[in-house]
Length: 441
Length: 197
View 1 (cartoon, each protein chain N blue to C red):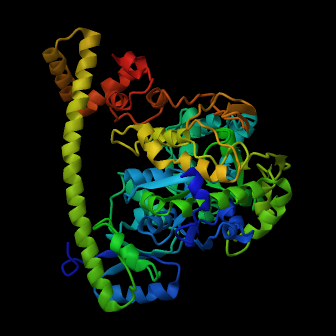
View 2 (cartoon, rainbow over the protein chains, first blue to last red):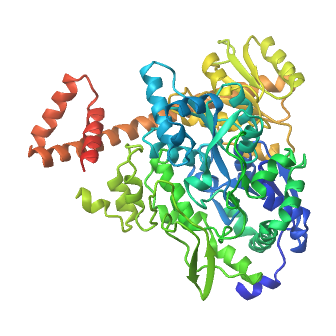
């Protein structure tokens, strides 16, 4: 296929792609606005969708050819979690990071009264939150309520990870609910919720409106963690392989263009339009130009990796990212069936399609599909395939490591998790290098 | 539960007041009670918990779909049928693809004579689906409960040098003394063993 592919024209050229109005839809928007889709012979109509459920359903039934998706959606839909079952694949990761956890001023005040220094620290704020929760419980107050955007979202896994690291059980100690991103700030203002985990521009907007304070960014929870992907159905990918490759070439070029700092003001301007994110450019600008303001009374700080669109091999669909997401599905009881995690990760994440598209653009790709996470506290070089890739740090804020060869050990290693799963059985099916079996005999 | 025999409380979630007014009239004429109408600005989870509607009708283009889906994944929330209406041009394809009972889509749904039959079908399918799901869960649970008891028995045998029968007996006695289900006791034994590991 490698040599022929370049000459083959896309099987289908009129395409409808869906997106949710969040800043990280920019790779699709720029590919359209800057003519990258056109360059590869594709006539793309972008349609703005209102819910991840709609994105999933419309892609599932072919009303959309493909879409901007939370990384968990193609996996959850393939496994039939949630409400429909349809094999989906992704060959392109749209970005890394991009979320943050914001709480109400009132909750922050309570935390600051207990321990102002710790409340301000992204590394210790969850510990202070736990003290507030305990005090509430003693006084018979109702539990705090937090919101995220979708059950199979990184936001859900991030806020749970962050809470659990401090001993807060997100299923018992707080209420966790879903609120659409664009409604988060209003709900926080109205006191319906005490905090949320959401993507941009909504954290910056809460700070600008002085209704909330950001405690920690997704980047700080796990440096350069997976976020959105470009997803299609498995059926679609089989039927239109050359269209798929052409799409990924256009998206790769778009991501490369977005990654240049000098293009960021233009990206901000374009996506703030009412057809796309429909939010003030000055709010979108913050994260898009790599600055971040945690509270309205503190100065913006530089956080260039708050949202990464291309560098650090950000577009490569690492199967280890898929495997990590599946470990969290088990951890939180979303997945109860025994599956071979790497087999599912291998089905849904398709790095070979990415490699083909990248090769046609003369971009090198790594030959491994899996990488270890949590072992690089700073920038590092991945030596592979005669190339050196500049990679970003991959640290988890609690210092844990994720070894994709020991998945069952990783899940069982968490103190707070759902306990209804027979991990021994899971270990048997996965047969990886976990020592779990040895420990339990 | 059929629509003829029971007055339903229905929650309507729509962004367009004029359109909800039409649907509300249709439903009220058929004898049902509209308990709440929420726009996406309102906190839907609290509204549903407050009003306990029998059925939720939502505009497919409302962002609250994600909230409703999440509520259904939480076992503490009583699942309820959700009907969606849409004027989307893709609705033919979507309707074809929607699985029976989970969710129903009303397509060009504002004609009075079309709304009620679709609601009836949605509720009937939902009930059917719930029954099957409950039965499946019961079977699955009893199998899993047996496994849990087996595991807990194993732990006791290893830790306390019980033989199989006395391990089982002491578990049963403890469960009875504490007024617990055997499987719940097994679960706590397993959890305790994991903590001590």
